[in-house]
Amino acid sequence: MMIPPTRRSFLKGLALGSGGTVLGPMLGQMGLQAAGVDRRGFPQRFVFVVKSSGVIPGRLVPETLKADLTDRKRFINASLAAHRLPETLAPLEPFKDRLAVVQGLSGKMCKGGHSSWFGALGVYKTGGEHESGVILRATVDAEMAKLFPAPFNHVGLALRGKVMGNETEGTLYPGISASGAGRELPFQASPDIAYQQLFGSAIMHGDGAKKRRGLESKLLDFMADDIRKLNRTLPGAEREKMGHYLNAFEELQARREKLAAMEAAIRASAPPFDEQKLVSEIPEIRQAAHCDLAAAALISGITNVITLRLDNISVTYAGLGLSDKNVHGIGHGEVCNGKTPEQARDIIRVHHMKLLADLAGKLEAVPEGDGTMLDNTTIIYLSDAGNEHHGNLEEWPYIVLGGSGGRMRIAGRYIRYPEYGADGHMTIGNWWTTWLNAFGNPVGHYGNFDLNLQKSGLPQKGALTELMG
Image 1 (cartoon, one colour):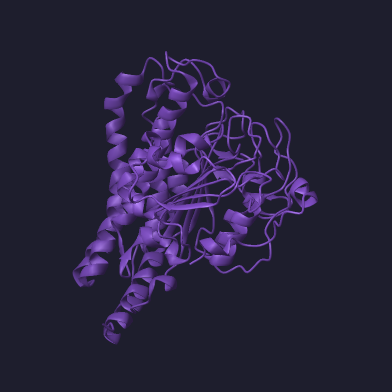
Image 2: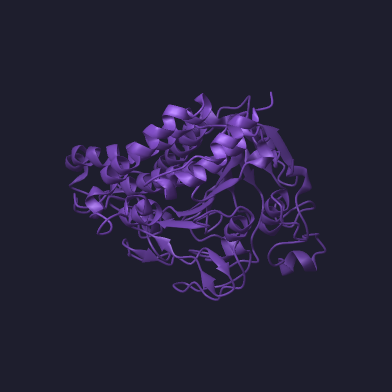
């Protein structure tokens, strides 16, 4: 049914007070909803979640699908509906209809080893063991940000810095994302500072910003008058969305209150607890805080693209009971707290999938058009090391979550391309070309070619049109 013009005019003309800077983008999206815009009219949102130490392909395959995968030269595109996800993906079971597991794509035009650096999202070889190298072009996450601009065009959040770095605070440069040649994207490691940078404008008044410790409560208090005024007059659907927006901030505040209770359980194997911060220095908690910030930023509309550097090989997951070794040690096959390397990696992956499921759940709860925000969001989980700790990059697995605005036909699918060197084999260059084409950048091919495949006469150029909606 067509929305009455008066409602559209009302949403366009809403006047805001102190919280206008933060609430403005959201009201713009509400205007689209009121105008009856279809799914493709809403901004598309992307969260690129980059982990370290590889994603082992075999741990992503449903057990009941394995019998169909023995011939590695075949292209497989199977529904996930009739298959239970493997244990390490189990937290995503509720979202299986919007989940894709994509395997078989190679990335040997990139650097192998502990990290491919900018190559993972830029498709070229650069860097060394400790240095990220030369930046040739904008990485694909930055290209998406250009297609869907927002007040914060591209947000980077990182647990740690470079692949073996120990930096945990402030602005970091992990070497994975760039806005253009020679222009690396800065990432924020400190959730409290990220909170202030993203939402602090809503509490600037009088003599300036309040102290960080009071940011959450001050922000909520300062926005309360605006939200109350809006809720008196907003139509029902818009009032519901505003409620979810407020909930995203309240969860950040509630997380802080829970930290004290968690401290005792992990004090023995975790870094010191610091109650002056928005979150503690415990990696698992900081990762969750970054995901909460991502949800709040996307729901508010202040950004449409977030790149999250989830960990690096120096991280120790003591909060998961893996205090004996860091990710690097586990990656090199060392036993950790009595767990085999495979078991330890599975424990970490389950934790990561819980983070993704929590983020997806927050977006799923927000109505948008004839669906939810998750329908217009793409979450892509990958490793900068491809298929293993020292990735040889003959395969580069991806886990994709969300509806992608109906522009991709991968939701609810397990997809595997023929193995490296076989007829029909494709690369991550084809993969990222597909995403750019599907969302409005008709590039002929994104990234460099694999010279060995080129010598063999295997086609590499262009998009994977079979995946496009």
